[in-house]
Length: 260
Ligand code: SAH
Figure 1 (cartoon, helix red, strand yellow):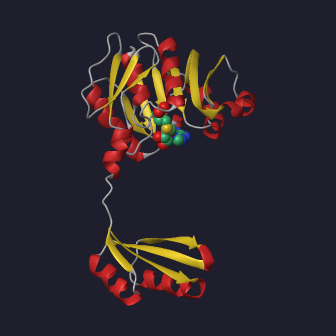
Figure 2 (cartoon, protein in one colour):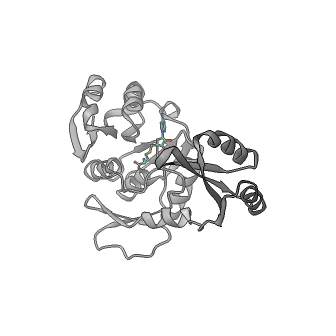
Figure 3 (cartoon, helix red, strand yellow):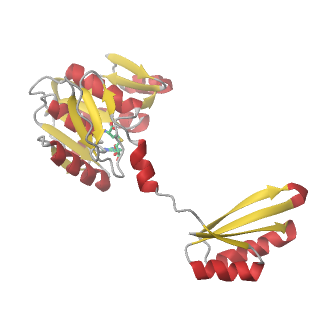
């Protein structure tokens, strides 16, 4: 990436900006300077284009430092202890599992669910309390697959995981395969699930989706079944309570999780 920067007056600014766009800038930033002047800085993928526009405008040309976004994102995902039972670790690290913990190795790719979000942690804590060996679990909106893997490690069987986002389903497939657990995946949502077939649903999505799905959840739960629902804020309590009969209400920071 290359950049060309220059100072100009307000009268010159619009002309220069259109010139940068004509020469194929990837984007530009403006900074107001004292005395009504502006600093413009335009970025170019292409070196000859940057040199040409620098020569034409008298701007200062330079090569930008490359920033490795993929590496930065990877570094921000560190191993996490979640609930009493889980150790969530990036798939590219080999940190040993603390004793007594269940290891979940994840590469979240473009999907949500590294275990660092409060709502994911609240759901993991609820799964620890509620999943018994042989409980059938549906992870609705599986993202990285984290909650389905956690349920399977706790002995849930069978476990289904679905997501309406095709990328997430693919990411979940890889993480589930790495974990070596039995989880049935599918692209889609609650509608594809047989009535009365699920002992426990876990859905970490958002207040609107959760309240819209209330009827579907009631349909697919087996008698005596329940749901762990999250993805909403403490301030959404009224909305949630208006559609669902809460049995438990848990919070972490601004985020909430209910058992219904
Ligand atoms: N379960 C993971 C990821 C939650 S992110 C965790 O707890 O960390 C929420 C996911 O729900 C996203 O991947 C999104 O694509 C999916 N989603 C949103 N609406 C949905 C719906 N109606 N049915 C199924 N999945 C949905």
